[in-house]
Image 1 (cartoon, rainbow, N blue to C red):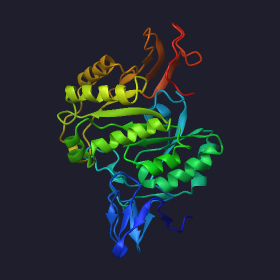
Image 2: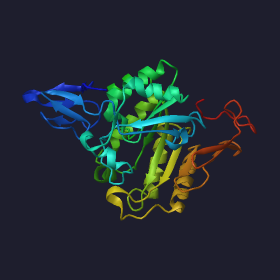
Image 3: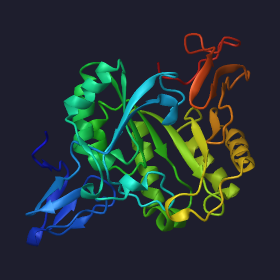
Length: 336
């Protein structure tokens, strides 16, 4: 049983019992008795506390491909978990029942960081994914899980919106092995109006993940008439090549109506294939079109030989030999 609140690791005290949160790039100024924008952190008597520490709202075992991470231990299973809360308010969120709620409004199970690590160990899982909602908002808990699991040789993954600040990312980076980062669009207006965030701050954070040598893959959920402009997709792909390199995998994902966008149309698969074509033409070596019940295979960037065959998050065939193409010998971008 977890009976004590967890004091936040990144905040400043201000006058009149206000506090400033320094965990994410929103830098909330929070008055006494009030939650921050993420609904996960609260000012109590002039101090900031995590209100979701150890309160696990979702727990499961997934293929690592479901994160999606296609180039990080392909075919492995991962323990996935989340608390409630999120520092974004995406109108299309698939997990809004827990991401957009305060902890008191969510059914949860109290599990210590050691408990999460033991669950992974008992299921012979070597990867823990901090996912489903936004791991940044349950940072104190995620940090302890990552630190403790790292001692056992386990790997840690963030599935994130990429809005964490410099200092907390630097601190956890020594325990963080991979991240799938949602690059939700390449338009400031879209980010502001649909997600409640700033594109430029996301781009800064993505470059930090790269700087700290964390394996990254990017996901772009393509929403009709919101972020499906092909010129913007081209600009996004050119930014990826320039700032991150040609090897960072990019996943285009189909949108299905949810939350506050239930009346919107789902993504036409043709749009995803066109986006994929743009990305490949821009020089990105590994591009996938997902969430459309189709194969998402990896081919050699040099000779186009089939390397990994996938469907429905399952690896059906793996032809890699020592991380190289068996046909031409070209070194591929994978973590094993």
